[in-house]
Image (tube, rainbow, N blue to C red; front, side, top):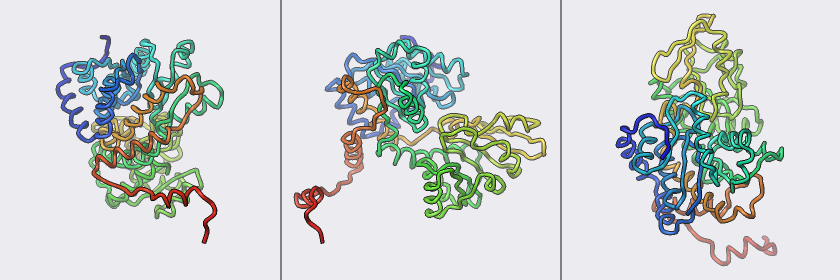
Length: 418
């Protein structure tokens, strides 16, 4: 079996961590049990480009139990847990190509190692696998039945490809499932981002000014959790509707140009590039802490920051100190990459349980329906979304009401009024 991981001797630690995460992933566990009996993915090759974490390990285990051959690479150079990668190779015979801290060339060599296996289904987080496949191996796309995409950034890229007529096989946007973005993006990103910031800095949030750049689902979760820790939260936005919502939620809303002068912490969660730029760095306080929780490391303009700095040094793990020409110091966390995965462990397993349950069921859906799907981006089928929610509620021991026949009739008729 081909693989490329840091050290197989880490496998025992990785196995324990995978088991710990599995205890809080009851929905995915139920799906795995069914997959083991029914083998709905028998004979299918799956190429996955995901954060190599304990939660991902339980997803790929589930897919393998369903009969698939699974090949895994990292979707971010700093998010890989080397002990998890080792455990998947040694204990589950799953080929993994991922090493924490890998350089750009190694990162793409790992993506190509997965594509060398000619997968029929792709699972992506950020669309680097799909993008590489389309750019460098267009002829190979004819052999792909379909794929899934995990994150907002990737869905944006794939919808752009579909709009231009460039997407060569169907993709299901798992990110857009209600049981994904309403929970994973909000509660997962909110908690794990603060976890990463606190692990990296050990600074007090209470009483600080915390600037959240972007008020999408991830920004909402981060703002909520920062306020819960006692921070005074400022939101910056370009969308008037989201800005208005932030105001109604009680946050201060202002342009980043103004927030730059008062912020103690800055975190980007926009999915866009060059959000924090040179003009903002120059206005920041001495000691300002800057980080990113969007998928790619493009939201903070580090190139311009280096240009206005006289010195850059690592002052503690995951913290780089930039000394500006004006004498002020700015601290950047995790090289501007996903701080929740680079400095912490990513989303808690309890919320990834729903996201990865969607992934597993959408892969099964593609296997069953690929002949009728078009070359575009699809939403997660409503029945899958609701099934995941039902399984999660059941696992939590929570029961809900059902509609009476009279109520069902009322909701589907027009005759009855006041």
